[in-house]
Amino acid sequence: MAGSRLAGNMAANLFSSRDKKEQRKREALSRQAHYLVEELGHLKGSVVKIGQVMALYGEHFLPVEVTEALHTLEDKTTALEWPVMRKVLVRELGEDRLAELEIEHEPLGAASLGQVHKAVRKSDGKVLCMKIQYPGVADAIDSDINSVATLLKMARMVSMGRDFDEWLEEVRNMMHREVNYELELETTRRFGEMLKGDDRFIVPEVFPEYSSGHVITTSFEHGVGVGDSSVAALPLARRNHLAKAALELFLRELFSWSELQTDPNFGNYRIRIGEGSGQSAEGASQTAEGSSQSAEGSDQIVLLDFGAVQKYPPAFIEPVCQMIRASYEHDLDSVIEGAIRLKFMRREWPDSVLQEFGEVCMAVLEPLGPESLTVPASAMNDNGEYRWKQSDLPTRIAKRATRSAISRYFQIPPKEFVFLNRKLVGVYTFLSVLGAEFNGREILTPYLYPEENGAEPEEH
Image (cartoon, rainbow, N blue to C red; front, side, top):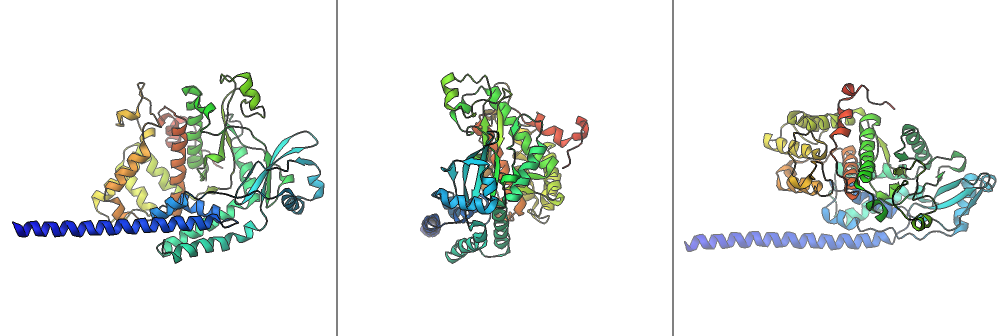
């Protein structure tokens, strides 16, 4: 008996010692990561933006302590003086073009890659928004990424290998797209064409004559942030209208265009509140620039910043769409098959792991599922409508995945899936912030079964 107790105590002490050692290791890594972030915050150029991108998309490649620290990285960029920015404009556009504009010298905002100035075209009073890239930023992208990666490697915060190198290369490509304003201008124009006639959305008009590789000029579009109190004060029906529009836009990007805005930052969206919001005359005058009223009298989503838009190949889109349809139909085998095609599951894994992984994937579709789907009572209102905020779906799914054996088998997913996953989380969060309450199946099914709705998916 005494021997059994001694063995038990030794085992307990052993595991306790291991747990404490692991805890100390995590705490040390966290301190080291926060110190690294503090150092990055003092650097100029694109380093801050690179760190933020790594935080957003690095969960499969960086330790959790590092991504948590990177999430605290703040853009403390000080705006450059007007004479410096004017030199950029003269070099990019020429004096004759600049003479056509009255540009405010005080920027509307500044970030690590550039700053934004408001302008007015003298000939007709058209209000414009000019995003001007800082001198030398684009040329320093590669060296800045190499510097950040070297710091991470020297601090032993990353596991070396092909997966990390490929992910780092994707971060590099994303950053180069971010500073390619000619590409962003064309993408903005294309999205404007694709959404033409859909009055739920506003895409800024582009002005190529006042744009270049380092300057992008669009119409100045008014609106308030998604989390603004004026949006929260809207009746549920109107918040639902905005939420449904956001969800359908995501599905259209995925199923019809194979081209997604992958940056979930709420700064890329504004809400233009329409007439009938119950806003007082004083309140309207305080936002007289146009942010409180839309011409059509209905609430609209203003889409900004198309620098993070990515086009996806059929080899990726088709299995993803297969998994979504299979999840809706509760076809576990097809969900697993789609995941295997995407190469983040392997056919030789134990059946129990494949099944659990497939069920976690299907759980993501909870707000969009068929009427027969069992949903927690707390996630539904009295009318049987899904409550996006109260459902706490992302947390429930994360806990389930953590408790299961998936983590021991889970492979690093394709880089495309990492960006798509972030986009999906961003959409769900957008709907949650709006406090939306509706079932998404009516929006999803036309994309799953276009032939039954009298239309084929759009081709662009």
